[in-house]
Amino acid sequence: MNLNTWIEKKFNTKKYTLEKTDKGISNHNYLLTINDNKYMVRVPKKNHESLGLQHAHEKEIIELVTDLDVPTVLFDENEGVKVTKYIEDVKTLDECNDKDRFARCANLMKSLHAKEAPLFIFNPFGKIEFYKSQIKEPIVSFPNEKNFLEALKKEYKPNALCHNDFVQGNILYSDTKDYLIDYEYAAKNDYRFDIASFFSENNIHYIDQRDQFYQAYFDGEIDPMIDVQVQAFERMEDILWGYWANMLYEQRGEQIYFDIAKDKENEQWKSSLPPEEVKEKMLAQRGF
Image (cartoon, rainbow, N blue to C red; front, side, top):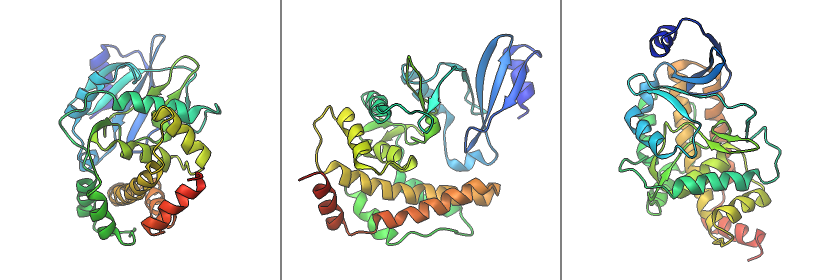
């Protein structure tokens, strides 16, 4: 697809500027300016179809989350191109210094999970097998992977509309409104997957930060076992996104995917304790 031709056709103009940004991992992102109006344009990178995503599903979700997402101007279901309004003066999670930023994200997530879940499911176990099947030369491995995943399957309960990709760039803060953006992976899933995604993708390991999130998400009624469960999902997500990155590194040859894959592999040491020892450690830290 020629992006300039696409823009000229959709906006019926040849008078615009297009500036590529450094945002996005599996997509290209551009700042589009037409007259005095600014937009963000998301365009899939090559081999995007290997991710197994369905743009029709994303379109359905976008219509459900208008209160959470940045306003969508255009969504091309065939090409996977999404145009949204450009919001001034927003900060991503890593840029935000507000001491309540973890609680603010919890409120976004809680609002998402309260919505009616679609029929289609983001099955992390199936995704792991799919990504592994696309890899010819593995660069990562995970200890006791098979037994761990089989055990977690027994606890897995897809019960909510989940975002499934809580990386820092998908959480935007402003003085007037907070946003949760980019619903490519959104589908029905276990709500604990999203919590684990937020913690894992943003290296949130300190107890006070995690507890601030839990206090907001659960309205102060925190099950002392929740963090033990979430840590199991964090370990599973390291496996999932490790193979995802391995696959994309093989297909695209970009260093960022190699780095992500090895980072996910290296995170496994944090989950190396047997389950009972993890449980005892977490309960002791919280005074139980």
